[in-house]
Length: 337
Image 1: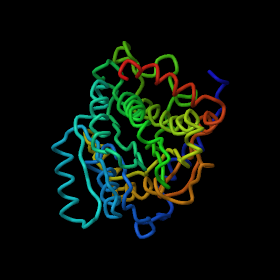
Image 2: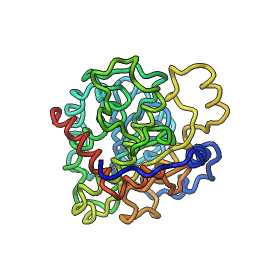
Image 3: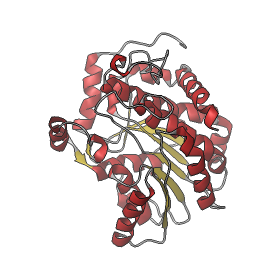
Image 4: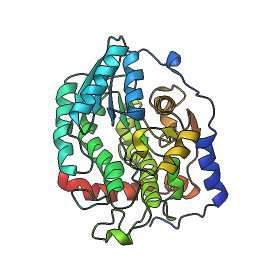
């Protein structure tokens, strides 16, 4: 460990959740978005929920969007819904077969993305896809706990393959958004990560922690990834004016809770906001001129504000813990380069 993690209070945990239940009004709305003609964005998990709304709003602003999904037919169906509803000078491409539960699929999907991109500039990457499982049972093809594979290993591996296309001085807009959650507040006590074995590989399912702790770990990791990526690529990031941030989109009514019990679904239905509000949060992170290169690793909260993550996770953004976590994940994904 870089240094002992600072303590955090239960009150701060409640405060962080409160930000999702009673967020501020959307700070950056579609009428404020710039025209995105000639710009290209990659959005993962784009066929439902927040991702669908993000693609739609970007396309409305004439953006060329590449939707990266697991099931191509579902991505194409979502694309047709948007095309039928929105007139635009932009395009929507769909790349299927990107399954973060099987790291073997990501290189081929990324290759397809690069082929579709061609000589066009890549301006925005939104790591939106995620898994919030109702239990701790899920295991990836590689034997990793499902949420860590889907929410942490997969996005970092995909980003590895996109870096060469992204890190070019070929546009005035360069953003990466790593989608997190207020549930990082429920993660492990040491910077949110179970450092000895974050993937719980070879640990019997019955000995895994509860699913909220595991989901929280993956979302704490996303916060650390946002800052670590910018630090690892610091020279080029500064040169091209890129900003890398994490984002808690909000407590929302989406398919993220599919598979959960009826009580949880009723609570989300009561407390949650429509998924388009999550898109407002993510697109504040992706487009707002208020964010500059001085905001690397910022934690965006609903619906378009700069907030603060849990005290220890916040400390991890400046004491090297983020880099330790990044390097640990990098070692796990190297066999799939």
